[in-house]
Image (tube, rainbow, N blue to C red):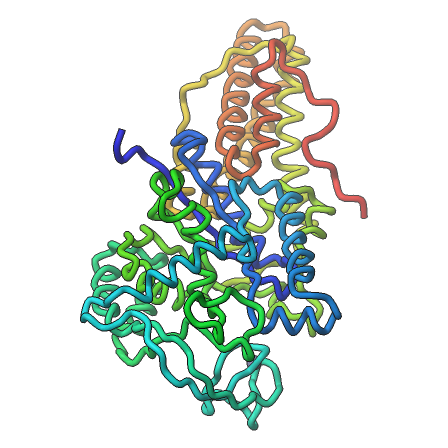
Length: 493
Ligand SMILES: [Zn+2]
């Protein structure tokens, strides 16, 4: 069958100059929820979820040198920390790609060779050689403009940039900009949310975007992929990094490539918007490939009202959260903080109270109460409606609209209502009554409560697969029994 529904979702590959933090975790958790949702919808084999690490560049070579180890050993160490963090969070990726994988390096070289023989829509060479002269900051790993300096220093790294002049290879970006503008305007390439689309169109309309270099001399970037036709040069950032979305699928001949390209959803944070919304489409157009369907951009967030920084010491390690709350509660606590795409704040300070309120007292308590009453009053047996899936369908629609916070709010509203329903209907009073009308009502009440719980469990499947399955197992057993251990353990003070 042609055009069978499929879903290819990617996170950016994370740069290994740093250990995983809550920002990386946020993007990856979002991807995980979407991947799990679409696996349910389209079948496991029709979803491909890619994440990984970006491992080349002068900054990596520098960091390794400082530790007196070779860059490969350094990237092995940091990359494995990302893998550990994602295992801790129960992230269901299909592939973890590393740009130091030999397969990736070979495909990047093939892509570069292809670009070199390509003509742009205006019949220029796609790649050309030119002098590049400028001020280079090793920390930023880029040339920076005189006007960006503060007191002669890089504002981010507080060091004076080095003067560098070298012959590099450049990508003729300008020739692709009108096509990219058109495709974004027509939503052939959807950029979400809308304000980011406007931002990209604003950049494109200025029409002074410089061509970007695809290589650097071995001297300025010693750690990278060799440029196949010029041994003075190494591939520079963007073709190397962005091509991971293709190399992971074994571009150009792999079965996965034929099945899954173009990407359906590429997730990224704001800082790499320009590269994904402008450079990446240009590279794809030059390779004569379709563009991704959507780029979904999330904003930056602060931690307890402050910018996350090593100096302040408020960098949140996802492993620390998992150690306290477990994987599923951590995902809930992070995703319920703010709407996708918004620039906002994560209240880590409030996590303990929120965990106790929403998970222990909210969901956990509801499961205990309902199953306990069905067990005690109805000998574990209750017929309930399996067909009314209003909540489930609402939640699924919100997930597809990337409204994860809205989906969770909806579920927790139902949890609250269900707990309130127990308090108002007082099944324990009816259970003591000898009146048959009370007995009938008790059955009806517990049936409704069980149906609600069933809906809640199904609605949680993409967010908290283990809790969801645990609840379903209880409800689908021959006799419903209150679980011996609560779903969520109260935090010890
Ligand atoms: Zn810098």
